[in-house]
Length: 211
Ligand SMILES: NC(=O)c1ccc[n+]([C@@H]2O[C@H](COP(=O)([O-])OP(=O)(O)OC[C@H]3O[C@@H](n4cnc5c(N)ncnc54)[C@H](O)[C@@H]3O)[C@@H](O)[C@H]2O)c1
Image 1 (cartoon, rainbow, N blue to C red):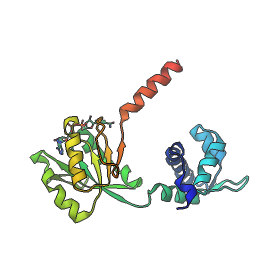
Image 2: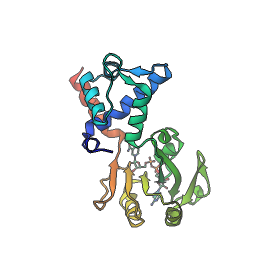
Image 3: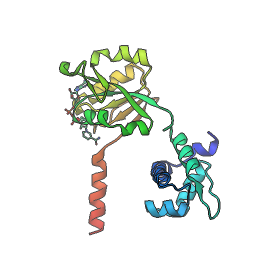
Image 4: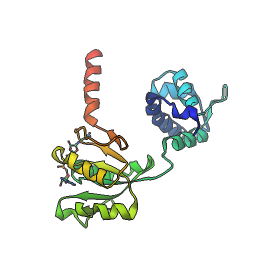
């Protein structure tokens, strides 16, 4: 990775998966090249923005031809880390945790959940989508065996910090936090908060502006 890649602004980073999805669809349609104008039109952003975003990751198109679809997919996937598989543990196999275990799409984005943990005895020894579920007290042992250092947090709100602390103790490097709690972690741990509800407020607001 060169120095320009390190400075990719976060909004551009968030747009890259859209470009990737577009390029994958284009490839399915048999299109071996795509232009920034086509991508921009499809996604609803300016073509100059697409070109600029892609220049950050050193993808340059040919005038009047565009980008090679293969190259575009390869470079974006590599840049986003989707070609590597990051293994993760999931904590809390309830409605949301269970749905995430069922989601095969995560693998395409480079995340493989290899085990899940819960405090319900009846779940231990079962599996969802071939992913084994263990009683929570087996976490440390399995963490040592597998070296997994990403945890997905889908426990109830009142358990969020406690389970996060357990991950911190076990030397996890990243927590994908689905709980609405702002968990407290040391600076060296990456936390990504994700909420489908956060986007609802944005949608309602845009609806108000756009009656
Ligand atoms: N980010 C989002 O968009 C989003 C959407 C829905 C729910 N949530 C949040 O996700 C969390 C889970 O929601 P849900 O509806 O799946 O709840 P749920 O009650 O169906 O599931 C929670 C599971 O966690 C388990 N659990 C409890 N304490 C635990 C512990 N210490 N260690 C391991 N497992 C433990 C429970 O036994 C249960 O199976 C909640 O915090 C909720 O607010 C977030």
